[in-house]
Length: 307
Image (cartoon, rainbow, N blue to C red; front, side):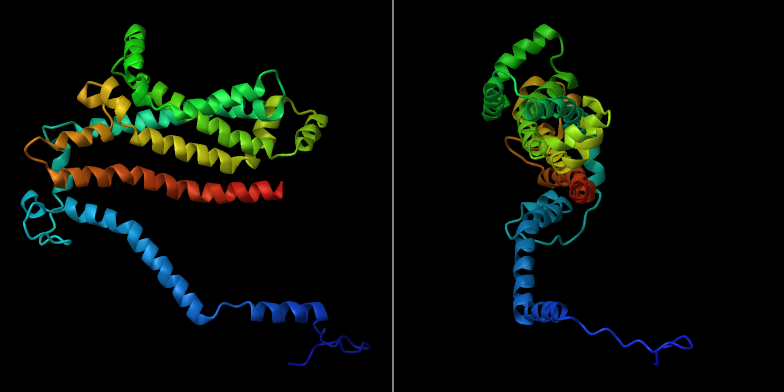
């Protein structure tokens, strides 16, 4: 199609690509992945996906089998009949009140995560931005607490919670999970705060921003990936905690799913279809968390790069 020009003006010639443009085009063409290499990468990724998903698929198939089919001498991967009613009947089994166990796990994990964030955010910001006597010793002691497991201190925690009157309560497990995950959250967010130039804070302070405003309005968007990492780690660790919950929570309804799962494993008989069903239900909230966090993580990375 001929170019349209105004009367009295000469038609413009199409701009030719410069040598730099031609170089970039040739370089892009030369760097294209061959089809064979692309297929090999896709095949390798598929193999890795299958390896990671296979245990969960076997667990899911076992959850819709009957007890007799699971214990069959000639087992099969796929169920001969799909018994979806297992997911309905497992909530009313006499072994444990699963609905209360699920609520207990959610409350303990969410509250422990929020408590960790409330303490770790100002602590990590202060240790990264300010120099005070004993700072390195404090950071060393924080990371040392990560080496201690709750199971080692259960007897001491048992006596302490009896004195406080909170034994066999959600508050006890919220404090335990928050305390033993706090050190990792402080360290991971400390490294992110330390990576932000101090000139960013100084520029905001020159504009009249206070310390709290600098933390919430300036630094938090930049360290969002670190916050997400701390949230995921704390929530998953609290969700999977077992040893301390087994000792400190004696009422069946207050126990989390990790402890309730053991009620289906008996000395002479195990209800494997319920074990698999509860395990599938237990991993669903964690999967939902990762799906919800993924977009936030990408948004935090982009926000940090722009600012």
